[in-house]
Image (cartoon, rainbow over all chains, first blue to last red; front, side):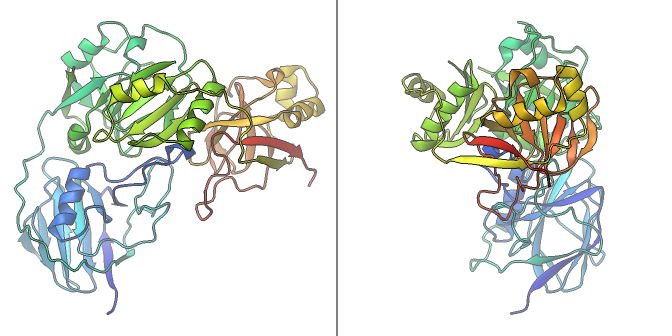
Length: 288
Length: 204
């Protein structure tokens, strides 16, 4: 059976290959990486009958245009991009049949940030350290998509998908992210956690897969002024540099850091963090 | 030892010394409790990642309080020797700042026995402890935008080798041809936590 290829005609601001990353190697300085919104990646894969962890395309702010060499089943999830196949509108969150050499075009989404395009069989580029994810901080993994690229598709699983439409809530306008205090809440003044949860934070334009740069009206103040010897950092950590404005660590965060982490966002709420746009606001709520 | 909660699936264990961190790291690596997924040593801490379905923070904290913490001695994995051409861009300045001559700086860098305390900053970048206190200097005021792969450098109490070209603020003493990071090798990183390392001088 001949191989299927995905041909990239155009990309928007950023399109990378992502799966569930390369966990367990932080001790070697290798971050997990992987899809910023794992919920949407997993759904896209389920919709085309793939194992949830196969590699798909993570698309930031739409703009992707592709063709397939052989007719293929695809699905688009995450931020709602108006999508067409050969000019005809197709729905998100459902399997879509893309005829051979037909053009799938994704417009920028009206809200949300990252969309996922899964192809039945998965994107089958060679894995690096067990994963096909592009780590934008370390450079590990495949290169970001660019026009002219040809991506091989893997063989499909035997089972055919059972889901034909997944109702998915729209991304929240001003999400509330639940946090667990620590590990370094005692490096901050006693009112810092309260302040973190009382004031809204605006997402800065220099946010990316490494983290959200957040801006609150009042900076968080330190109680311990010392330098923190570098320590391991986790996904969802709210690391606070000397400015007092936190960075919310996302998929490509550094594995160690020298600024204290005041709290960590719970895993279940991270998909919101992966979908907020610069200029949007979010809030934190402390879990006891 | 302090045990701090770090999100839903990690505990951060804090010690007074790098040796204690490595002691617990080696113990847990040799006999990981059920549910421990990941161990990330760092300067004064060990992050223990766990599966919250199997293990919870209080049970892990209790187990750790009773864990025999051996202070790290030599790693049974052996010793790594890194050949270095001591032609670093910062060598002359280091000599001035430490009030030693260049030969003495080189002698002190090659005389020490180092331990890989932890990795961070980039894949395969090992922070090595054991640097002669006479060579302890802060990072450069202005980091370089590009340090070549194989650059051997010092900062604070650490020495290290840059695994690939990157920006860097450490002071460069020399260069090695050893490939410290190779994704096609198993393990890909030459420097793994706990390993003993020495540097030797080569002239070519």
